[in-house]
Length: 337
Length: 211
Ligand SMILES: Cc1cc2nc3c(=O)[nH]c(=O)nc-3n(C[C@H](O)[C@H](O)[C@H](O)COP(=O)(O)OP(=O)(O)OC[C@H]3O[C@@H](n4cnc5c(N)ncnc54)[C@H](O)[C@@H]3O)c2cc1C
Ligand code: SF4
Ligand code: FES
Ligand code: FES
Image 1 (cartoon, rainbow over the protein chains, first blue to last red):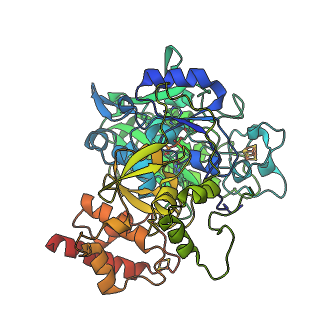
Image 2: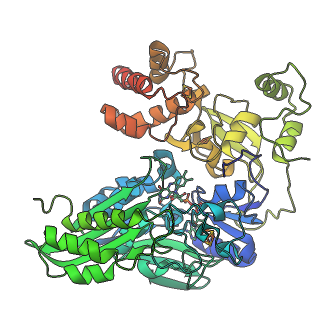
């Protein structure tokens, strides 16, 4: 459905706290009426389309403690309000976790990266157009999936783990963060939860209305990446219809620790194929101890797509994902033939 | 009041172009009624004693000037620039962060002004296409390169491209053609005049290095 230009967006009360403490106070006070805003680039579509009408918007742009990238004992900590451009160009990120720099640099467009934030990128909502056009589907609290009917347009939808809803997670940074064993730091009232990135994202079986475990009132403050994978061999690839603005049809992130030509440890995560970034633990286990060669890559690719259940228009994602997993095993630079 | 496209002219007098109407309204100091139409203000009970609460009357630094302006909480920077400050050089193409026509610099960094809340750029340095030329009228080297090379067709996308190029060249003054294309990749040209735009922007980069 084409986006119509209407007059700006519905009115809301705006707050611009300057500390995490004040932010949490505001979120507690306004509960489900409040909307947290990072860069706003996912937010504005919802508001402009009148599909979300929060009474209160809590803008995080003045909370200095949520910004910036810190060296943290071999790893790094990225404040939730750090812009994607900062993440993609930061020397420390590039040196230690080139995987994340690369994934982040492929998000949307330069201007969106200049404003969009790390927190907003991982917390962004599903891009299924039925949902985004305001259709009352499961994810919107209804009891039908419009993307999974015989006439549905579902070329961009899931091939794994669908449960009523067949939407996918659209984030490019999410698979990279999971591959790097990142942890998400979430403030929930007085408590702080530190959650592995993998568990931060949830499928429809856990909560069909949200892509992450963030609930109203929660604040993501930072993403921590441990030193474990610093400087290891990485591969990121994003396949999309056009080279700017577009979300991934499928993307893949891998981190490989190799001694000589043998893989000692690997992480492999694919996004754009299920409601949660899809970590390939079976493939990771399979390649452990194997030579990093064409045969291993071939078998890994085949194993990766086992159990895929395509919809009417997205069967192409199966060979696409298989090819991307193969490349992610063979990797850039490390091994060629 | 009916919800209408932002481009409608209240009253719709025949023979009055939208641009002249807007300029006329601003010149006549009638911004309040115009913006009431455009934004349908709703200032429900605000309590300014809470931490983080926001005043509507703010000072913005636009093109080197301090401008006092009454900004709604849900107002975008593109709307403030165009309809409150009369700076209509900033264009609105999609209003969805998908075309780049509205690009302005915020502290030297290109942003889509259709997708920035004005209140989030209080105290920051905003530059639109109107603010590029020197006070004596000398064009910015990027503008001069556009004039010299006639790099656009209809030029609706031009202010956005120019602002993006100015911002990008601050981070990379000596780009290759491919780097320049990547730097400008967040701007669309409906006339698809990309090669000529790139030619012009490469000349602009050279002009800036010489300047
Ligand atoms: C045209 C377009 C193209 C895009 N293309 C891509 C793409 O290719 N790849 C990609 O990955 N993304 C893409 N995006 C999605 C997304 O807008 C950006 O990636 C951006 O990172 C979002 O960040 P933000 O800070 O602007 O988000 P916001 O809109 O501020 O926030 C997004 C969501 O996260 C919540 N949130 C934000 N910060 C926090 C926090 N600290 N704590 C709790 N909740 C929070 C908000 O409440 C909101 O629900 C695109 C968006 C647009 C408009
Ligand atoms: S895929 Fe999910 S979001 Fe899309 S229509 Fe179905 S239930 Fe809604
Ligand atoms: S009008 Fe802002 S990006 Fe199109
Ligand atoms: S010259 Fe017409 S849109 Fe670019």
